[in-house]
Amino acid sequence: MQLHFVAPCLFGVERLVADELRRQDIPDVTAENGRVCFTGDEATLARANLWSRFAERILIEAGSFEADSFTALFDGVRALPWEAWIGKDDAFPVKGWSLDSKLHSLPDCQSIIKKAIVERLRAAYGVDWFAETGPEHRVRFSILKDRATLMLDTSGEGLHKRGYRRNANDAPLKETLAAAMCDLSRIYPDTQLYDPFCGSGTILIEAAMMAAQIAPGLRRSFAAEQYGFVPASVWQQERARAIERIRRDISFCAFGSDLDPRAVELTRENAKKAGVSDFIRVRQAPFSEFSLPAGRAAVVTNPPYGERMLDLREAEALYREMGQRFVREPGKKYLILSPDDTFEACFGRPADRRRKLYNGMIRCQLFSYFK
Image 1: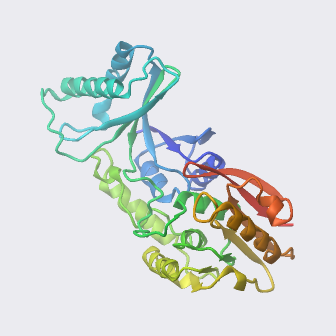
Image 2: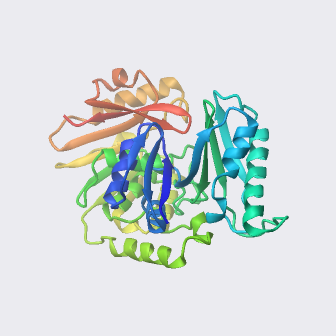
């Protein structure tokens, strides 16, 4: 079955999402603002879910059409082939958003879309009542400037939930953002990576999984594993393919430290769950003890800052100390995530590159130093 997919993502990482899909031999990849589109079959669906480090979820695009009235919305939804994806016993809750559209009432949009799908399935299956006792098929819609797009969620829980982080510290970094930071730092099988504010270890773990070529979704399940139109053999084959690609013969090592002993213990627990504890060394230590050995090394970190854990004055003092300890040396590079517009002034020198990223709803910059 030829399917059209949408992978929503954080603003600023669209190219990373597109590149990783292409690396998985997925065709027709197009990056847009906040999402990446591509085509493929059921194997593509499974592969994209298993390997997406940066996307938030994988959606099937059922269709897109103009809808400037509730009648047009109903007719457009009813015209889509929902029976190709939703069985007569399946549950299909509806959720979505509307922006700059005449159809601004979300409850009304949800109700009309639900009724239209029911009518389509009623005609397809010849039944009058849907108990919805089967697997859940989440229908998502977006209406932007009177154009409606209907999608089916194949991921279930967001793809940032890898399955290894059951616990987190007070200010967790989203796994997809941590992975993007690691990718932008260029992780290799022999990289020596450091995070002196490791928290629950997300950056360390994502880097280790990247270096060892461990598919980020290998230890979790997906909604589409219960979908009738995706054969179980497809998931088995794609998981087997992912397992075959894992590399253990690498010299990669990630070193983490944190002032909080609970964070250190969390990092160890999460690394074990992720299957990368062999590649991670972590200890309790203040930043004042941080130093890098001679040779090549990468620091990738998300230090505490005013909107998270420190007040502004404490954060700025920390940035000044970072500027003193993150010294310019051949083979050294530093990637630091911060929402503070005064970061470079406090750090003591302008970044060689800046990239706008979002940590949840907080607009941040990734400041890169490599010269």
